[in-house]
Each structure stands twice: as C-alpha cells, then as structure tokens.
Amino acid sequence: MRLVIQRVSHASVDVAGETIGKIGPGLMVLVGVEDGDTPDDAKWLAAKTVAMRIFDDENGVMNLSVSDIGGQVLAISQFTLTASTRKGNRPSYIRAAGHELAIECYGLYMAEVERLLGRKVERGQFGADMQVSLTNSGPVTIIIDSRLKE
Image (cartoon, rainbow, N blue to C red):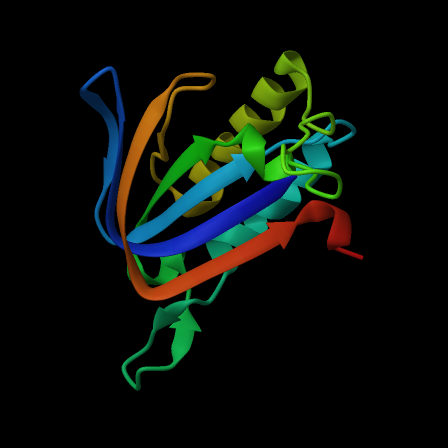
C-alpha cells in the first residue's frame, strides 16, 4: 500500500457537486492499494499515519502527531498511486489491487485510524469521480510505502 499524507489546514472531497467529506486542521491521505497488499499493511500504515510527527510544537519544530493536536483525517482511495511509469508516457495500473482487495484494505486502514485516533475518519467514495480541495500547510507532504517498511 502507498500513502500520500499531506498536512492541511482544511480539505474536502465532493462527488457530483455534493461535499461528502470535510476536515479542518489535520491530514488528507491518498490511499493506493497494490496487488499482494495485506491487512497487516493497512494496520501498519494506519499506525504510522496517527503517530507521524509532522505538526509544529510550541517551538515551531515538527514534533507533534495528528493525535497530539486533536486533528482530523480525510482518507481518499487513489488507485493511480500504483502507477508504473517505466515505459512510455501512459501510466500502467497493472499493479493496482482488484476491487475486493482494494476495498478491504482501504476500509481496514480507515477503521484502524479511527480506532487509534478515537474519532471518525472522513472519506471519499471508493471508485467515484471525486473533486478534492485542500490547503497544504507548510507545505508538508510525506509518501509512505508499506513494501519499504523493512
């Protein structure tokens, strides 16, 4: 699984002109699931997300997590994170997980973040054409790949 985590002052996601998820200060997370990913990957990434110290403390040092600041999380499924761009100019998504595995890992990731954070995770709509808006604070953007955890 791959995540793109962005520290935001606010973010939202719309489907068909309707806002379905919206947060204030916190993390906007794009979630990509690859073939072969497991529930353990989802749980490991959820723990990393909640504990990632990328918010400023009283001295302006990135030393606080989303949990520490009482922040929110917006998680959006993003199969294009699995793109291979090695050949040609058209990305290949052959590594993307099938529908069932992708939904399972995306759902488990959000459930585990909710459990660890102690609050609801806002979300996009799996498979929908979504319009995502955010203000990246910093900017701070972190990429995490569960296949690189060892």
